[in-house]
Amino acid sequence: MIKEIIDPEPPGYLYQAVATDLTRRIRSGELAPNTPLPAEVDLARRYGVSLGTARHATRLLRERGLVVTIRSKGTYVVKRDEKPPICLWGAPG
Image (cartoon, rainbow, N blue to C red; front, side, top):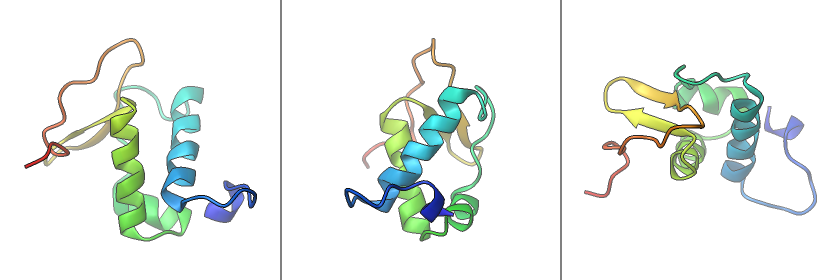
């Protein structure tokens, strides 16, 4: 649940707390390179947040270069020594 991962001080956005926890899990190896990230709906359930919050957190991870989303395939953790490929799903229209 989100209450377990956020520090009550200072207040912040929930999507940042979710992204921070996922970043920690990626960097620790808990979420290994080339493995799929849980679906956004599953992330929302796990962290007790809305689907929009989970999507925002996933977008932040893409912007940080930690994951890549492949349309109709899912979101995958990238190797840290590689640059992620262009994300077509998150590209502006």
